[in-house]
Length: 151
Image (cartoon, rainbow, N blue to C red; front, side, top):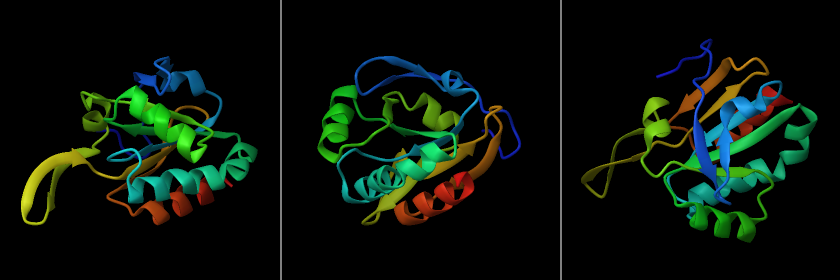
């Protein structure tokens, strides 16, 4: 699991359009990478739309946003269109990257234990170094903290 100060491990996943996207494609820009449990659910929509609403500020800070979830690309495409999200959503159906980055783990709801996405975000600088990591963060706090580090 990478930590603050580490070089972000590169990965390659399909985006909502089925196109391959690598983290290293964004070298020279800051990256806000956020992990969310499921497209088109209330908390995830709050987080994704928070980044959408702050996108001009994010772009002004020489940054991009990448969303990461175990959803299929077609589900991500539908949600991206519905919410008018101006950034890529990446599909990690095997949760390989989510596990590698520490955002896949045991959760519980209504007394039942299961494995799933732990809402998180990372901020990566222009040189590919992780400058912030927030695991188990609320949708609102994720947007606030990540955007403040960019601006």
